[in-house]
Image 1 (tube, helix red, strand yellow):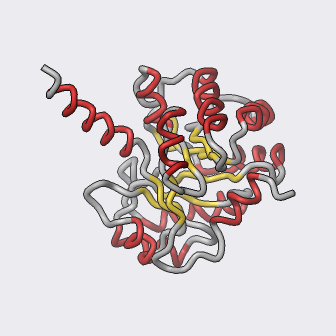
Image 2: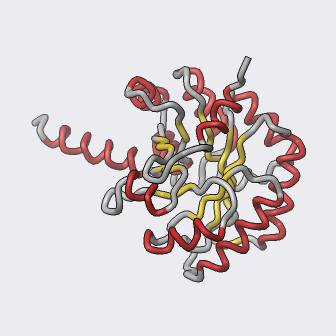
Length: 238
């Protein structure tokens, strides 16, 4: 029997240009059901969106509450779910892997910054290698590269970090905030699947795929758009 992780990993391979894997980001069980019912084959939670749903600012969600929220989302749908667990909440790799697997998640995002500051890439490489050693093939690891998000515009810096993370066992690399015009360069320099962040005012997922994206995610963007729509509804209630 094929596991959810195997299914999720397979979704990232053999994709044609212009046909990226589009992964909506549910922030709770109800939104997860909406996306699954719409036919998306897998989902990827955004830590900022989940934080907002729980009443926290981005980066301030207690680990216990984040894992509990992920578990509720996983239980609500029949498709694979990957979880954004920020930089691992300071947990030892063994505990981090155990807690992720307990939620039912098939994968995770691990970012290479902490408290808004880029980590030494060697530190993050070591974390990824230890998580991979603990998880084996049971988790799909998406290594987030935060250079662009932290004001380092040099694409070579992102490519260097990405190469180190892939060597450590990352399944996918996520240079969040990379400008669309740099995607062909990043695609050429990064081995394996490339995750790209889609903005509401930017290229469409299909266009991002044509530029080199293997996988497209939305961060907290969908949750924020939903809340803006809810705000408009609320304004009409009086």
